Image (cartoon, rainbow, N blue to C red; front, side, top):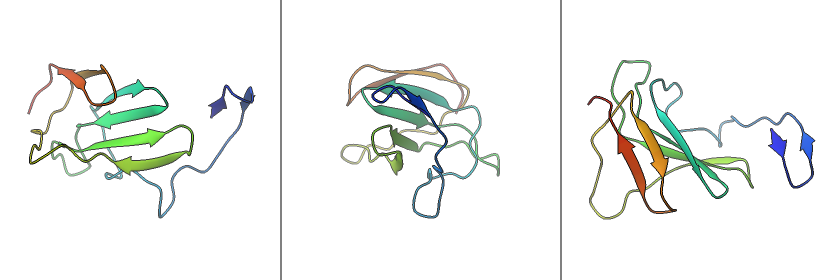
Length: 98
């Protein structure tokens, strides 16, 4: 990890019983950042299932959390796509397959 506030490079145990993404393995996902958060969306898990889930990593607390979508909206799973965070509420997802 690099902490620009204290200008140090250090190792920290990020994954533990209470701090891990919703999927233990994820490939072909997109990753983007907004402010102090990094978002991981979609991809394929170890059972070759296309994922529609999103996790965020807070760089201030070094914690993962599942992202809850607004209302009843649940996005369709997607893999091999690109994404960019436009603001803290909006992510533009391009390409990929379902």
